[in-house]
Image (tube, rainbow, N blue to C red; front, side, top):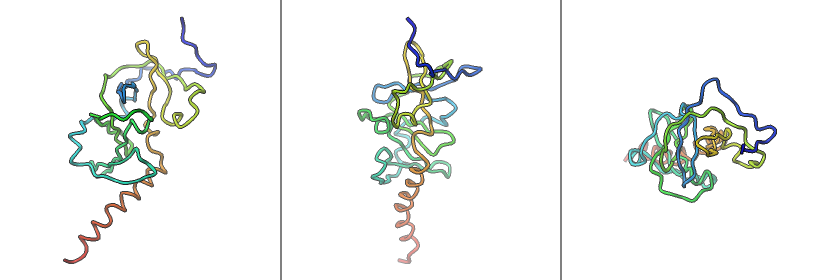
Length: 177
């Protein structure tokens, strides 16, 4: 039995298989292009470096981390994907993004031969979340679009929130005692 495909669901075939990292968030498997991930760290190793930010408009981001003169906003993947909240153990620090993503665990690295376009059933915000779908080991796995975690507008809003939090402390240091 062949999987049913949509008429416009043509795979985007690469000349070579694409390497992906398979990870879990709330018992749901996802894939992300391996070259999109700069490093994988335990949440414990970043706990001391993270600082809290408040932005009620973006509840999926409650922390930021300074790494190498760059601020990375930590996205809770459970909240981002509207899944039941779990206690994440790892953080994926993305390359060429100012985003770090909390995940439950890494399954493994794998190679996929194609990424299929999303069916029309994906009509909401998930169209920004995913590059497409992959078929691996008799499973259909959403392939993440790293740009889908935080929009440029949200990033600007987070930068403003961060400045509002750090500005009072800088002002206190500037005033004589």
